Amino acid sequence: MKTKNILLTFALSMAATAAMANDRTDKLQTYVLDAPYEVTPVSVPEKAKRPKNVILMIGDGMSLMHVYTAWTANRGKLFLTESNPHVGLAKTLCANRLITDSGAGGSFLATGVMTRYHSVGVDAEGNPVPSLVDFAADRNMGTGMSFTCRIWDATPSDFNCHQVDRDEEYAVCADYAKCRMDYVLGAGYDKMINREDGRNIMKELEARGYHTAYSWPDAQKLETLPIFALTEPHDTPLPKDRGDRLAQTTIKGLDLLKAQSSKSTPKSERKNGFFFMCEGSQLDDYGHFNELPLLMEEMHDFDKTIGAVLEWAARDGETLVVVTADHETGGLTLVGGELAKGEVQCKFSTTDHSGIMVPVYAFGPGASTFDGIYTQGDVNKKIKELLSK
Image (cartoon, helix red, strand yellow):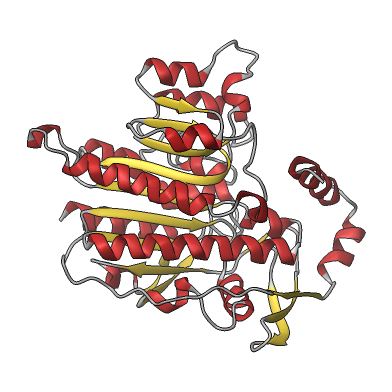
């Protein structure tokens, strides 16, 4: 079955009656990871006391229970848990609801300002607010992001767009015409080019000097910044179909941004380090669908990407990596299983988001700053403070 047909089936299941949803969330699901992967802990470098670069990795919908369930399935090892010496907890809420969404939750991370449910890149009154991308660009830093969802989805938009309602998807896409990122590699070109207003946002970006691509093979060939590549009309394929693409797109961006900040040009023309956002996007989808096997596949894909990023950061020695989430999805609970077999038995309590605090893992120079309990907006403020020193 094709990916889009699978996703359509899931979407239809989400639209089922409340009684059907209750039946699904009450169901015990079992998953076994048949082929566990090796995890070698990554040592923290001691080259720098403050970061030159910051990589913010967001597992959309990921809670401690997602992490621990994935850890159990992989026989007690994850890059996320074995290599990050500093851990905090972030409170998730928004201006007008206790339970947030990816728009408001991601915006709180991106801007440090609490906003209303479903808003992206604005404050509670609807006024545009600068994000970490703007903060970095204003300081002549490089900027980039990688993700596995469509570009008009909430999290990528939180860092680049300014809309009161994330569902105004064509307006969200239009905001990318003013994108300040040097590197964008994800999916979702459909609403960038097929528009009732006649605009082609990708062509507008090309006119600004961006190198663009509309497929993964073509995106792999791009080696000159700025890059804006969207490899599918909507989301990327399922984890087992796309392979390690998230890791590849992320490391590609990190290599290009590092080269940009160290190239042999006059100092005034170089970039002063970079800020990069990487999202494990489809965790949220499979939490909503209450599909444990796909959720674990996505969790392990995100963890392998984390491992690749930590190894890159350790070699660099001047890069802080922060891994967190925008909210929890699905009310996942691990209720049984067997560690030696990689078996997990779980239940979901909802097909929506919950109010569980989310973890914040930190690695590299400045990592100890993220110990403790705080709001998502404080994650933003801590990053800014470290880059301002």
